Length: 111
Image 1 (cartoon, one colour):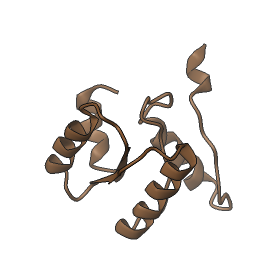
Image 2 (cartoon, one colour):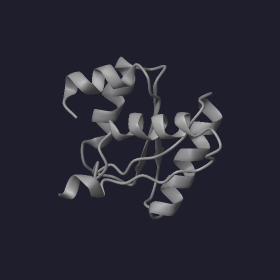
Image 3 (cartoon, one colour):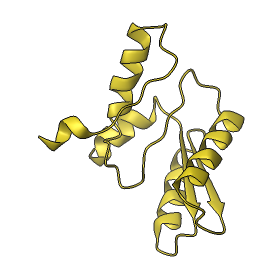
């Protein structure tokens, strides 16, 4: 997703970014985004990497505590699944209100 599309998407989504022991410039970059969109981006820093499951759990708990949304989900930082997939996922949930959980991944983009 290019920066223009991200700017467009950010108006409709909330993001929780979790930094778990990273020593590169990721934290500064995420804080910069948070400053631009403080009502939409929450940055959480935990002192050590405790694995993906702990990161997902911490991020989802923070999202539930800070945002009031109809849907919650997560993306890996490597963006193996594109951010714009969240709109397709939301559409699937809206089309079938009886769905309570849907798992999405980027496999269709491997072709």
